[in-house]
Image (tube, rainbow over all chains, first blue to last red; front, top):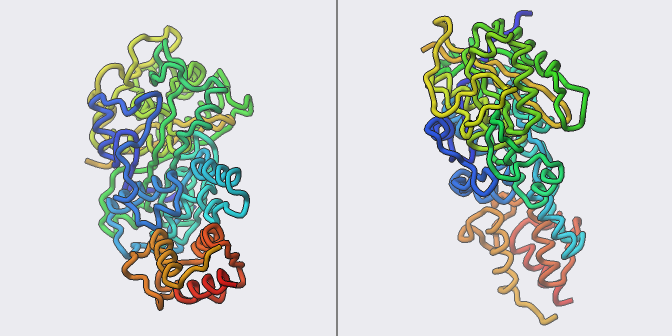
Length: 404
Length: 82
């Protein structure tokens, strides 16, 4: 059975740059940094503007983000009250790295202060990592395969990849996929700080010689994916295509990436093969680019291994984490949204804060300002979006822009 | 524990239910939980608040019998007076 093609018909995002996919790309491209005091907080997000009283009360902040981003994406896709597909053939996959951390901590306080009888019956349904997927499925009546994905900072990309596969191979005709995270608590900061993963200076400057760790952020990204022929038949506007997906594991270390980039390179190669593209047809790389010493070096090595030295040096590479920090399980999805906008607008946002080159990292990380995306071969542009994670998970998506 | 009046309890129950989602002005003594979209999870939370504030323990089997705001109010008042 040949693989079916999967197009993107809607995107949504809640990020430290604001509510919406457009503000994410526009503000990033114009040089705005959404990080303040060492964190990427979604300060503009007011849940009551997007959700009912009941939804706000019953959803942890991470799931609120997922629902708001899904709402934006589904509105853009033109899905009204009636889903344009058999609901049993519409999947929903929403990742998170941690889940309802705010709820866990609040209910632990209740337990300690008032005892076990006063712990909320909403505790579990609010902190379970599948709460985002469940909320989106329930609100929009999506009855196909619905689940959360748990692979730390690769989760958002794994979710999109899983949704891609279910449509490619006929288990679903459409899917809502993404990732969501909200873990900006003292406890989570302390945990990441104890690992020495966080930037002590609070600056996210991926690939720069002075990079000293990641900056934690929060938010969500969601995409609406539809089988290409069905989308065309219903007259949907196509924003792009999820053309390829590849995933591997390092099996190397709990937190450190495999330094040669070998398994990560393989994920890139698998995604390119899935898309039927070679390195020469890639116009942009949206890097995982966390701003840690180890990630940015290993990712650079992986890109060179997978694309070849010459192509790796030709292709512009930028990191969304330079503007919003690291959104953990939401990162891959938010970065896929940013990549769709990059391909649609043909504007490549820069790696903000990148000023001092690391002599070991010699690729084009798009310093300074946004630049126009130059098509390599006259076809709709294509991009790679990488996600890597604690635990050694490597995920690459290949995203193709729409015909202009 | 001082005796509580039906009016006091009903007004507190309405206030709590309103915080769960429905508009306070649509909640009457005869409103059913079903029409207010108040489900079993909400009722457990209501029971926790009632126990905390009135010292009245409402168990799962008690809650299953409750259909309306008035049912809940009357049960709480009768237990509080007992």
